Length: 358
Ligand code: GDP
Image (tube, rainbow, N blue to C red; front, top):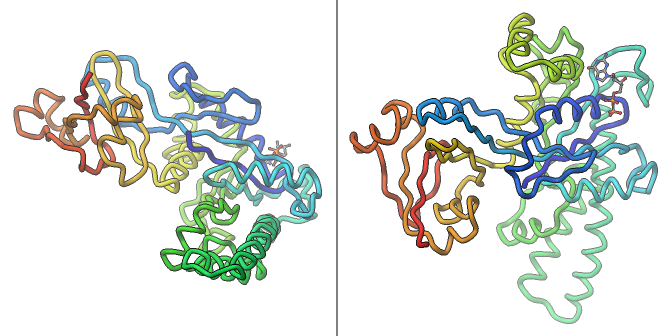
């Protein structure tokens, strides 16, 4: 399961955010790889389409799709030199697929700021410098290995590796992130194998004062190049304990359409390049996660690994057609049910039946 590491300086609201998220913990019985650890939460991805499909199919068993959040506490200035629990935490981040970087913008004088003042941009730079320095050390070690090998004889792979590493070294020395560096195709392929910290997608969650959480004209203090969303972790912690209906009323009262947590989860899903397809019937309606660009047999393998090699065809109805035709029978009658083969690229919202050899 894809996972998201929550990072940030101490006292910015990471644990509060994580605790609120874990209130959305899925039923682990439905997820064979669900991890049960105090700092890991497997959280359902909000998607109102599931309930609509279930209503048409006449089932009450709804299974959402999920992503995992990992609370990576303890990142402080100097982490790359082993300050705090530095190396251990950097290693934890390395294992994640993307980063949610929580930044403090709420002013509460009762909550100490490690650097004495509220300055979201500075805080982001502190953490990013740690990540960049950790990457720099990885890159420099690899560069010396690669240049060593090149002395014994050059080949095209080594040349691409060395040039990618040199580009990375220059950027990281300036404190820039690996993800901003431009590569040729060969360099990019090599770069993907390195799992650098600063190459991962980042969503910045700016923990704002309660009043700012509802402002339509909120401007990110982190500038236009960083994908940031404002949420009040304090509000989220309050709503997390409420029933779905009460939470909705509470949000409507303060002028919000949805909870900030829902938005965080959905943005992560998008940044990870994930889309959803559905299976639905009288027994259950279930959402399944795949990467953008996945072909039908590999999508079927998410349900059961054997489905890939035994794949015959997929019967697909797009979500909008399924709803408009009031279900599979209606879609079939109006020619909206498509028969797709092995080369079909799955689309977000596809409602599928996979036909497989058994
Ligand atoms: P962490 O060190 O980043 O995990 O931060 P915590 O989640 O433990 O929060 C640190 C302190 O800040 C706690 O006392 C929280 O109650 C408080 N806190 C977190 N978020 C907010 C917020 O949005 N507003 C206010 N006023 N306090 C908050």
